[in-house]
Length: 567
Ligand SMILES: Cc1cc2nc3c(=O)[nH]c(=O)nc-3n(C[C@H](O)[C@H](O)[C@H](O)COP(=O)(O)O)c2cc1C
Ligand SMILES: [Mn+2]
Image (cartoon, rainbow, N blue to C red; front, side):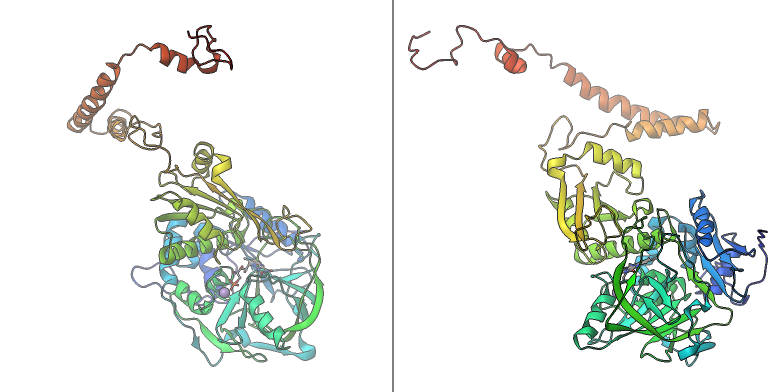
């Protein structure tokens, strides 16, 4: 087989391409606009050679996932058995750089991305209605519906079939409030017009579904594939139920999302989406679904009866691009989505409802981003750190978290090495590790006992310096001082390094200043301390030797009953 990679082949649309400009940022017009920008930045590769949708695309994506730095996003232009009018794209936000680019941010550190994400979410931008949109350039009803019109991957040999929904938004509405929800819920193709739909118990979609079940009605849904990446971001993040998640996506892209009315269900969808699947989820019908290679990195969930979705209409753009994501052993693309979203929402929760004092949250992609969080805070009272951990682990945004580590402000939560040091020097297991039994936990985690339905243990590791340790005058603190050279020593060396190693201009005055400080301060202290020479008293000697001190005949404290003789 010939493998050709064309870097410069033409993409559907070339207009609206946006770059970073000073002043007001402009949102991407659509997925193709963003794809074009990624390609120009060397962040996307077109694969024009034929690739098999069965198992093979996963290998290509995995290869880029395993590259360091992470490899490019991939646009598959030629899938086996499909016309070149049907393409597949993956990895568009599969690195911090691309995640930042999707938000038009000029930086790449997760901390900065999270800051911007959080700020934008604070001011939702409601969607606007449009009379028509490219997502309805082609419309299929009835016999004309065929989900396999698109090159849906069979991701892994161990999967129970082809999954069309791996990176999308499932839109539904609350029966009573009418508030719209967007969630990401896996969608397996059963036949040309039926799919499964994954619904964990705590998902808003599950809530909407059970509202309908109670009144014996199906739930209308619209599955949106290939809309703006911000739609996927809000779909995969656990926001509070009162928010219109499309308004949050609007906030993230800094421009309202244009919507069009669906053709067969009473819902609205982003007008620029590549593909929309309109359907109803039956209150009573179920279908065997799975297995599927999942977010936790295993095929662990097995085969189960899941709700059945019947497709009422498929609408799509001309030359539609199917957006997909390869899940599996970290670090896969979805880890970036969870990671940034959970960090931002967790901080927002702490800010608005406390406990106060939380400085940063890191959900490392390496630890299955949604399963672990490192919370950095400056404990202000005994129990403060644990309170923060317990709050997060029981919160909505933290509903999938399994391990929470709490660290002080001198530990960088983004440096897993430092976190590991804190765990090893600030934790006493019996006191500082808290196990929460029988919490909600999906079976995607293979350590969840198989007899459990959807629950397992969660842990909090409090790796902060405990405030209830007694004050130690030698430390001048309640906790032993961290052993690194004093700041003044480091400043002095920094100056000298510049003059000696980097051969820059020496600054003798500044050097002298530091030296003077160091000479005075510490010398004085130790001079006094050394003067306190001491000879042990007999009692101190006994105390020091403890149990091993040999018993003497005349010991007054060792008197047996009946021994009345005075000594
Ligand atoms: C790729 C991917 C697949 C997911 N699959 C499912 C799924 O099948 N079922 C589910 O309940 N949640 C799934 N999730 C997690 C939900 O999207 C997430 O919990 C989200 O917060 C749900 O939306 P909600 O907060 O509005 O309920 C998936 C997330 C991603 C990124
Ligand atoms: Mn929601």
